[in-house]
Image 1 (cartoon, rainbow, N blue to C red):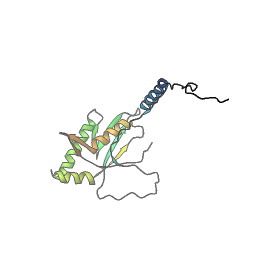
Image 2 (cartoon, helix red, strand yellow):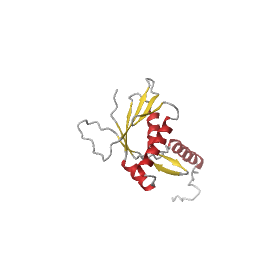
Image 3 (cartoon, one colour):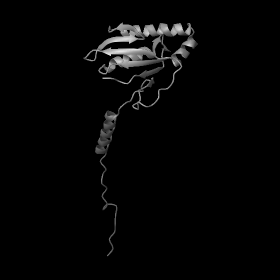
Image 4 (cartoon, rainbow, N blue to C red):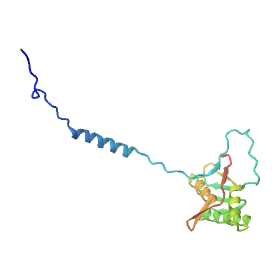
Length: 168
């Protein structure tokens, strides 16, 4: 006896699409929430002190300007000194420092914009901070020293910054 296979015996299983779409949306939401957007950081030309004390320092054509940031025992700003001149610990101490640097760079350049860029590229600032100084003040000092924005234009003051080794 011969058994005939007809299309009626084959049962088609329906493929449920709703759970598949749910899974796709859950994966999409997971990847959106776990995405971390990394903002590009500023490009500061900073030379940190090396751990090896025996390494010789790189010779520089000009002596670096010295910026000393003193801290209170709680880490707040106690005094801001640049090449012997004190700017105190007021709210506008960093603005005063930046204005002083602007006049120094302009005096060295002789009011020539091309010469100002040359001074900015060649001059170096050495920052000495107290060990317990809050990090915010270091960033504000770097911001004040590196340049300013005026009329939508970025003006560089000092490009080369180095730090003295921290002392407790």
